[in-house]
Image (cartoon, rainbow, N blue to C red; front, side, top):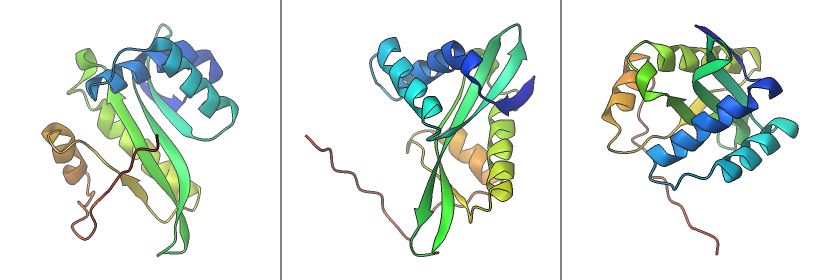
Length: 148
């Protein structure tokens, strides 16, 4: 298994994983939406995608980083918005390796930090993040407003 940058040849596999990721968060399966979304991010170079390549044109996981800025730190950062490993490939260290690749890339790109969010009930992910040195933000609450 190799962690590497996602490429256009990986589109179908990334789309499959992205659709599964969305379903994990209680969204309906929608391959067409997933394909449009991922294709746009890749074509417009709006995100960085790392994949876990298990050979034979198969991917077992991915993470997606979005570049943005932290005004308080007056510095560029990454937001790691998506991290997903196929259920059959979990507990093998893939998520850890994807996170480590994201952090390495952030250092190379001169980012001040990497932020991420996870579900409040996703205890396995929370435990992994904390084992790897990530700190839960106890100072700020996250709010969201749907634009209709």
